[in-house]
Length: 247
Image (cartoon, rainbow, N blue to C red):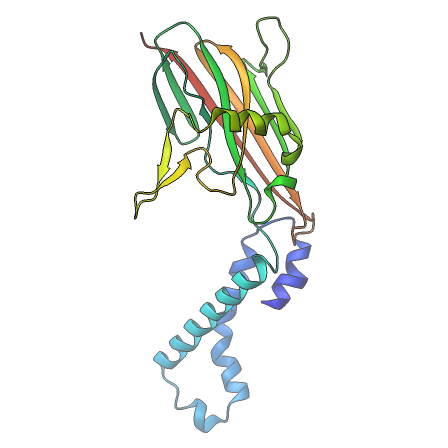
């Protein structure tokens, strides 16, 4: 585990299959190693069930130590991410809404709707200092307002530096269309579905009036300090906001 963490992982650009495949394959070396290290009178007493239990112990010991070495406070291999998807502030004109697999579909009972777009950034250690790039695209171009000014370039910098977006999220005061998340066991309110964890950092942007169409939201997040050769954990996603007129 120590060899994989401090020697092999720094040579890889990111999570690779070999990082778990190689240690798993080494389980076949358990019987030969016992043959070398143990006197033959003891080795001959081992049955197939003994070897199975020995391999089982090896695999789960490796898993336990690996979790300790690659998670906080020893390290962090998990990239920051937008954990709760997208949402919009509750507003007049939205007849229906549905979030499914990265697509947010809104049904309107009028021609246009005022959209305040919200999302939440989370990380194992320090979401505030993750570098965020976010944009909204419409018909292959950055979203523009009615005057032709680009408003789709949402974020480019550390999450904490976007103070206006954080303030805009707080100003919504939890009034998000998708509602609140509930604890499945206790039924307690966990907060808005877009930021269900207390440590999530919410950001929101006023996109003005949007009409029917398909809008693409592109987001990328990067943090420094990862154990990979790049020294970074990175994450990216592309969401779709579909607005339709149903009444």
